[in-house]
Image (cartoon, rainbow, N blue to C red):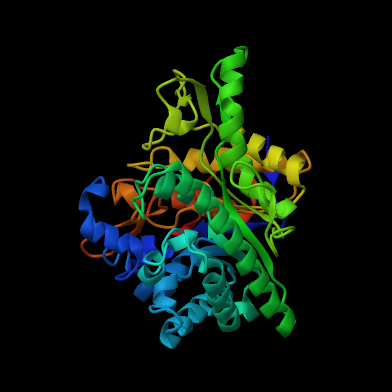
Length: 435
C-alpha cells in the first residue's frame, strides 16, 4: 500500500552529543579511559565524528537530503563543566546549532540528557543523587533561556529505562554498580529529574511566551511470548513488559512512583508531564521462561528461526513498529514523535528496505488513527555506539575514522526521496540533490 505522509510530518535524523561530538570530561569518557575492556572493539569515543566542529557542514548535508527535522543532544558536561559553572561559549555553540537548523528549514528536536553525566554529578551519586532533580532543572532552565526561543520540541531524558537497566541493573555502563536496588533507585531518580526538567522548561517558556512541547524519548521493546498458547510463556512476559515498557510512562501520567519502584509516592510536577510521546523503537523480543535468568525476571529472549536479523542480532519486523505505535496510542492518547528507529547494518545492505518498510508501517498506523507527528532515523552518520564502540553502523553517512570524510550510503538517497516526496510504499528512485 502507498502511504502519503502529512505535509507537516517531520522527517530527519537523530544524534547524541557524546556519540558524534566526543567529550573529555563526562562519566562515559572516564569509563572508556579507566575500563577499556568495557568497550567491545577496544575503541574510545575521542572526538567521535568531530561533529562539534563540523556541525554546519553536517547539517547542510542533511538539509540537502530534504530532511525537515534534526534531533541532537546538549552535552551537559560541556555546558556545566563544574557544579553551578556554565560555559558561555558552549551555550553559544548549541544556540548556533539551533540557528543553523532553522536556517536550513530543519525543525530542531533537543535532548537534554542522553546517557552521559558530568563527572561532578556522577561522583555525587548520579541520577540517584537526592539533588540531581534540582541540578537538572537548573541545567534545563539555562538551556531554555539560551535556545528556547527557537525550540519547540524538547526531550528531557533519553531512554531512562535503558540507562537504569544497563547502568544499574546489569552494571555494564556507568556507574558500573549492578544491583536491583540501584535499578529501582535510578528509575525513581530519573522520574524526579524528568518532572523537574519538564517544570523548568515550561516555566521559562511561559515567562517568554514561547511554545514548548516536552517529553522523554521512551524505548519501547515489547516482549511477546514465544509460544502464545503457553500460559507460562505468556506470564513471564507480563512483569518485564510492565516495568520496561510501561512503568515510566505511567509514572509520568499518574504523577506517582508506582510499585515496584515506589509505594505510589507523589512526585511534584510529574503528573501529566508528557506533552507528546517520544518513541525509540528497534525491535520486539520473543521470550520464554528460564529459571537461569533471574536478572531478566526469568524471561529468556529467543530469536525465532527464519526471522531476519540486523548486525546487532535484533529482529527486523516492520509490523512490530506499527503494533507499538497503535498500542501506545491506545494506552496514552498522546501525539507520537518517533525519535529513533534504525538498523545496524555493516554494508548498507538492509537499511534502504528497512526505512521503506518501517515508514510504511508508520503510514499504516496513521491510517488506523494514530496521531504520529514525525519520524527521526537513527542515525545521521556512523558513530560511537556506546559499549559497542565503532563496531556497529547505523548511519546514513559513512565516516572515515582517519580523515573524518563523510560518504553518503545508497540508503541515504532512498531516505532523501521519501523526505522529498513524502510517499512510502513504492519503489524509491534516488534524488540527485541527495548526494
